[in-house]
Image 1 (cartoon, rainbow, N blue to C red):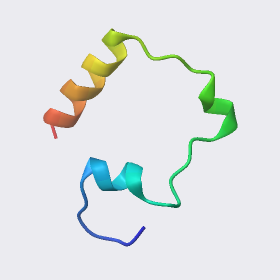
Image 2: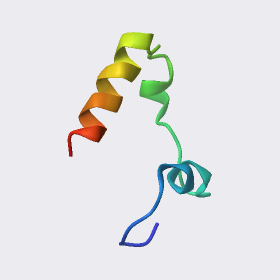
Image 3: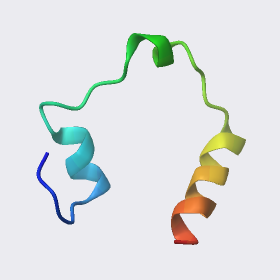
Length: 43
């Protein structure tokens, strides 16, 4: 990934994006997504 602005969609579409094995078993709940959205919007 190059430096600069990008969209969240492009982050996930990049060929080099992967989730490490140690994080794959983590299951997010609806509350986790809500917290993430609030944090992103506040920046």
